[in-house]
Amino acid sequence: MKFELPEKKKQVFRMTIPIRWGDMDAMGHVNNTTYFRYLETIRIEWMRSIDCQPDPLGEGPVIVNAFCTFHKQLEYPGDVVATMFVSDVGRSSFETWCTLERADVPGVVYASGGATTVWVDFPKQRSAALPTTMIDQLN
Image (cartoon, rainbow, N blue to C red):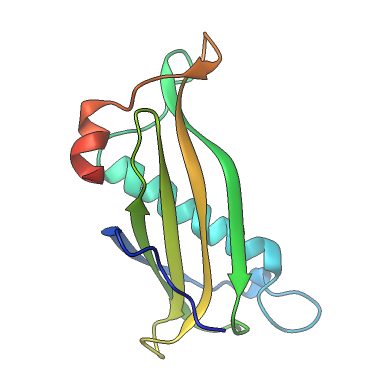
């Protein structure tokens, strides 16, 4: 199965995540739930890097949909290179896409996933316009 990113996308962040011994399951490969943790880690680190962290008393991002497709099994030991892209920027939402590759096998996608992110006013419990600092990074 070949992974295809949306045609109009922008790469916004890349990082390396070590595969930990505890990430594996009884079958000897990385547990499926851990892939979602890798996707969460790159989203959080990207938002930190652009100073768009959530404020529980104000505004911040909420994931309303997340998915992951498993192409090949990741196994310990090793490092995962996570690359994040964004697309479909709206007034209060955008899509994130991510590929997960092994550092020692560049160009081979082991998993791909993403999420729909909505910017929310937490006290009002409704969507809010994306902040300018976020829009600058998305476009």
